[in-house]
Length: 418
Ligand code: SAH
Ligand code: SF4
Ligand code: F3S
Image (cartoon, rainbow, N blue to C red; front, top):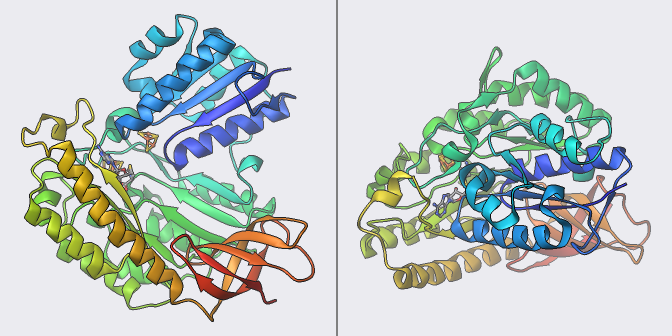
């Protein structure tokens, strides 16, 4: 039996595929390994969204091929599609390469040629417990000019609503407490029942004690009315992740985002009017042609929307994307300077957002708990919560109420109060 090691880079799709593979391998009698030295099968699940992530994956591949042998390494995901040649140059010809556009069934078929697999269950991998990730749309056709995902993952493939509801029901029935629905631009979901809102309403009708949320929304395919309808659902988490990318309309247009800052404001309004909800975003600093004035608009937008969390990325040139051919690149030193300036603002905003919750009680999903009575979880509005329990230690995947004592940039600290 093999000792396997799965190294995962990138987004929630990669997490889902890695977890599904880990489950199938475990059912087949194989055991996970913590270190490359002990492993006899290595799976590297790659991300191409920024150069740094790619470089890390290639360097890990070199190490794995040396220690374990190329024939026992599976190189999968987005970088595997885009730069198979470099992977084979590094690892040698025996390397198993699976393209990023493949679904998990295809990946498992390849893994199964290296070691025997157990029974497949793509519904809700136990290794993701207590959160079941469920695909709605695979691939992306939104064509933001900086982004490699449409090339790496291919055109959109939609999972039919019956299958989505079946997976959701199975996950709840087998004890999952949280469902996370996935699509690169999930607002483009279409099925016989309707779009994203209709399928989320149907999920909300399912029996059981569960929370759900979804990633990622695209402002160009979302309406304020849809945001309001989602906010009324009983089982939905009180958080919206809505990437803005830039606070300058001129840059948004060059990014082909197909919306303005004013459009974004209309979508954010219902969230900002409700103190129980959080709003998080993605921002790219230093997109080609970004002037001091464009950057100042991004700073204003970040402050104005009072984001509870921001994933801040330095622009990274991705081969073959339209923005990689733009000539007015921002010098790396200026990107670094803008990035650290904005990072300080973002950190202050997160701190303020958490500090105002001192004295409140929040519903929390338990993610880990220790015998000593210390536990960790995530609040219904998506914050990290560290808390103590005076008597019984709560089970992973249960919901508890936590009285918040104080907040920091990283999250909240408190005591269980139910
Ligand atoms: N489909 C999702 C996630 C895309 S990748 C979405 O549209 O929100 C996650 C984030 O990585 C993006 O939102 C963007 O902020 C960032 N990103 C994508 N390409 C990038 C690039 N070339 N350089 C820097 N950041 C990038
Ligand atoms: Fe990339 Fe845009 Fe698609 Fe997101 S919506 S994956 S940023 S092309
Ligand atoms: Fe990265 Fe591919 Fe996901 S590029 S973000 S792993 S779709």
